[in-house]
Length: 331
Image (cartoon, rainbow, N blue to C red):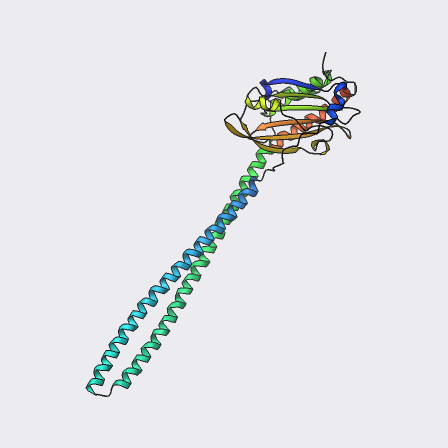
């Protein structure tokens, strides 16, 4: 993924003292960015359909023009031939009439026969042109169907390879990470310490521009504490002042799976896409907080989010106990 990691970024916290409870309650949660699900396979299918329809329309247009040109040329040539023959017959008839040899009636009959043969030949030619055009159309449709089947197969194989890559198990960079994780969590004495442990584990498995862990108040419908880390760059500076919708009334707090969103931002001289993934932190049936991860340009893979979800489930009971004791910051 592009962008700077929050691992070497700036760490800060947000607390909410008792004196500011009414002011905090009056503030409405910031709207979340609209969710734009990933539709790479759907976009590829749409593009394939549009390409097929466009090629089919172009082929039909070229075929119609070819048939029209061939028909016009043949009709012009035959009409010219009939005109020349008619002129010759009429000239001969006029000459015979002038000489008085009585061939006018026979020449007129010949002219009618030539006209009938011309019309018959023209009809046969038109039938042949239409037959060739139909054969060409059928051949084009068969080639288009074969091309579309090959394209769909290639897209299916590519999508399957991508899914397999996302679901592949990711090795720990630190071989002792899983063995020591429970001990590290049990040794924490504050919500900030739990947030730091989670931050370190997330750093091991993915590149993220910002990390935030909110802890909800035990008795009131508000955020009691929030631990945040953001990358030390222009995007991190923007995210440090950004409002996060991770309170008890947020959408993520009431979802069973990850809530995803993305938005396009102008940061300095560049445009980028900011992806957000949020997950409710639950101890039993109670939601005690929300974890928020943000990445630049590339969304976090499902396989990585599954590992982070296991981490949240491991930390949630201890974090709930620290919340109930009011242990937000370590001494």
